[in-house]
Structure formats: structure tokens, C-alpha cells
Length: 195
Length: 336
Image: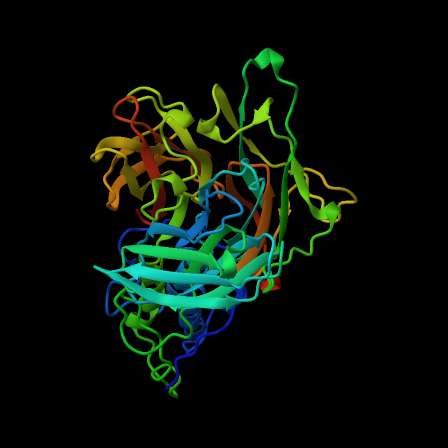
């Protein structure tokens, strides 16, 4: 019998599973307590990061994310911006956004191979510029791809692989050519008993 | 009588919940999983990528509003810095503001090779009454470097006895481990109430935009003024746009905090933070920590990847003036 991670509605006050001192010994009480704890352990928001990833020397940014337990796959929301004098004169799309991800280890190295780098199209044209600093500017948010390929032979737009563990992991990411970034878990383990 | 804090939660099999004997388990396991949450439930207090000039040859100072745990928790800090030329040691100082600045971690001895990524990890305890962090980076000999990011998340260690300020009360197996011990109502409720206490206490960073804040306006990489084409009053200039994910939410609220300054006397409502096509809150640029609450109506409502596109804008009250956005951060907690 599989045990998937539970989902709970989070109240603003503490839940009371048993509210009478002479309650019968119902198994539902234990299940409710177990469900609340295990669901809570997986409850993490993912922040909207806003930053300059375009100006000189800032085209590649590194940051550590805390990935919640049970997470197997994630996708990223990538913000790109561009400034163009005239859209007609724009010379085509910018470089792809790149994402390298690896569980954090002391030393700050990213052991990912080139093939493991995720590339996602920019969705904008013109000279890359930091949001409000170029006029007329425009920006778009794109979501990284949903192809599930855990052994890519070349860099491509695909799902980010996560550890899928019972405890949170810290994932170091190197983000190239983005001016905003956010993650979302899109697939969790189907069976906690196998983790 | 032992307080056990497992390094990983012990999964209670579905089969074990069908007809459990009136014995310590599986209740004891569930309670100890809540003890595990004390030590390992680690939603980040802060994840921030600095908007800062690259190749600095001076100190870099960032101030960020925070809402720390009520439990005086120890947090793990992870800083990422890219060095330029030279081998001068990297320095990192973290201070908390609690009516005055107090150093909670400082070092000037981080070995830093030329043109290398430095990952510096340390722990520090943040007082429950702290309202800001001030993080200062430096490099010996003023060798060039670029501060990239900081991530801060709880790492308090094993659960300890007593009721914490958050309401968490570690489970001690003294009663349940005794032969023939009663299984009390309080034990069943405590597992959920402990998890709930942690979720309500440990606020989760849902947005961050951070620029330098060292009383030298020219150090702010992107000011709101002529350079950013804010050439007239109330022209809104986009400073941040990104998506936050709040799993399974449909409608919730977040608390938004802002530090901004202005080159004239303080300016009203010149920093705006909101949801794209939704509500927004406005802040003055007066050098203080300002805050407001924003209600979010989420895209993909109720789903694992429910989220909201968040937008940060700056403006000036009159042509020729300049607004400096130093930090905007937003926090969420389940149940809001």
C-alpha cells in the first residue's frame, strides 16, 4: 500500500484532533496526527527573487535554495528583460537562460556537466537590459520546460531533478541571463515508504 | 525519559494505521517526527540575490528587514561571493538590529583565491526581537569581488525540554515508554499542535530584492531617477518581476517589508509592491523599515505549484529627484 505525502489545509490556529477527554480510541486520530505532521514537513514556499542578472559582471548569479522534502522535480519561472530602440531594429532573440543545479557542498563547486545544464529560451528580443534601466524596456516571464530527461546527452530545456528525500536539501544553483527567478515543485514522491 | 530528535522522519506505514494496538507506537513515532520538525523544518528566512555592482574594491553593506522565530533560533547562513584578481581574504560580518546593532558573526579569514566562487557557510543565533540584518562583505587589500547571494534557514539542533515561545513543546517519551502507559488525548493533539507552532513561527521568504545600504547613495546600483528613466513625478519604473510559489494556496496574505531612502526629504508612496493584475502596497522612502500586508489570489489555485507573479516598482515625487530602494522582502506563513 503506497503512502503519498499528504496535503493539509493550514488553519491559523492549532488544530485539535481530539476535543473531548473521553474520546474513543479511534484510529482516525492517529492518522490525522500523522498526516498533519508529514504534510507540514513538506510545506515550503519558494521565493520570487528579483535581481540584476544583466549588467556587466552579473550575467551569472549563484544562490542556494532550500528544497522541501519529497520533491522529485521542479520547474523555474524565469524573468527576462530587454531594451530596444525600435522593435523593428531588434537583432533577434537573446541568449538562452541557463540553470545549473547541484546539491550544495562546502566549497562552492557545481559538479554538473555541460549536458546537465538546463537551457530555456529567453522569450525576448533586443539588447538584454535590467528591467527599468533601459527604455523602452519590456520583460517576460517564461517557465522552464516539462520534458523529464534525467540523463540528457546535451543541455536542453527540461525539468530540474531533485533528491526526493524525506528531509529538505540545499540546492546550489547558478543562473545565467535572468532578472528574476522562482522555483516550483511540480512532482513529489508517490510513496514515502520508498524514500 | 528521553527527547528523541530523529534526523529523518520515520514513515508510519499505512498498514500500521489500520488497526494499531493501544500501545506507544505509532503515536510515539508521530510525536518524534514532530520533534524532527523542530530541528529540520527549515523554510528559508531569507533568500536574496544582491543587485550590486560587480568587482567591488570596497566594503559592501546590505540591510534586510527580517521576522525571525520567536524561539531565538540558530540559523544557517550560506553566502556566495565571486572573487576577482588577487588573493586577499574575504570578510563577512552579520549584525542584527534590536534597537541597536549587535554582531552575531564576523570573520576576516576566509581564504579566497583569485577568480573563484566562494561558498561561506556559518551559523548564528538571531534574537526573536531583531528587525533587520546587516551583512557586510570585505576583502583584504581591497581586491575585487562580487557578492552574489545569501540564504538563511533555521538549523536549531535537537529539540530541548520545555515549552518554547513559539508554542512548540518537545515530546519526551517518559510517559509513553512506560509499560502499560496510558495514551492521552494531549499526546495525540501535541503532534499536530507542535507542527502547527513551527509552521506559524518560522516565516518563509516569498520575495526579495536587495541593493546596497551604507549611507552612500552612489553605491546603489540602480536608483530611481533619471538614469532609470524616471524623469517625471509618479512614473513607475519596474525594478523587479518574478513568480513566488505558495503550495496549495488559493487566497492568502503576505507581509511585505521595505527600506528605501530619497535624496530630498522623505518621499511618500514611492515604492510599490504587488501582485501582477492584483493588489499592491506602497511604501515611503524615509530610511525606516516600513511594512504592510498584501492579499494574494493565486494562479493555479489549490495546486502544488500555486503561485503569484509579484512586481516591484519605484517612482519619484518630482522630476529631478532620486529614490533608492535598498531592500524589499516579503514573508508568508501557512494559515495566513
